[in-house]
Length: 384
Image (cartoon, rainbow, N blue to C red; front, side):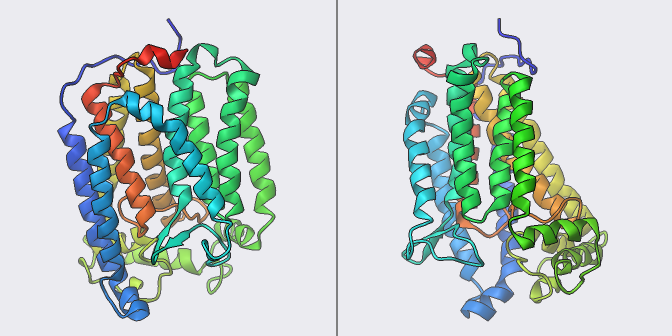
């Protein structure tokens, strides 16, 4: 019997977790409602169409829901088989971000591929690819995780490759998040602490060095360490977000009645949509949304535990839950000025079709795992 830091118990399941499905629908519905409130003014001013952002978000939500329904029913063995192709596709999409004309430079970054008027952010798909890949490979090589050269190093190369390409797109936050996600899965898979610790130290040292390469990254760190020193510059966004949090009070101003989104809060429909949420629904509403994410995490980790000795399903459920829940916590922490500002979005809420679409796909796989308990026909052949 393999020793692990997390000892799950297998709980056979025959039907999908209805509470999980309700949570996904509730979070998605709340997200669309708050996004419309946060974006209609900007959409009217910039695109002369108050429905510009919500229309696109609803379109992505519909596509994501359809994809989630498919992934909730496909055999896990098929998902396992298709993982290498999806990883290759993810790398190709990441490289396309450097093709002039196909990937325009926006605010100093090349993170989006634009086709037929719609943008695609490959780094969001990299999160899904990374979870699928690590779940597959940690399962296949679970008896050889102590082999540094033949097991750990190849996994690190994929994690590092996706992170480097993301960083090259000037998306430091997502690059760090991909490394964080990889470290979490390595740890839970019982990879040697020497390897995991060494990778974490190397990533931390490299991250500190890369922080020095862009002035705006240093400004964010200094703004966090010395708040209020540059209220009209680096501190402006965080101070505006905190003002929105404070204005919300206990009950909030009411849906659609917030004022900070009208121009006083940059990226109100995207990275800082949580501030709009706090202003309009108040402390009680924020507590409710946080409780929903915590319940989502509880259900996700319970599903992972229920996969028992089906280690492929266990790694998938753990990785998916961590990916969604950690992003939510990081985004909320930024708005509350508990950590330096990042570009991590709030799942289900922030404007961004790629993010919402991938979140739905991840949830579809999690629903699948809640139904199957992580069982996979012909699973033994994947371990050879």
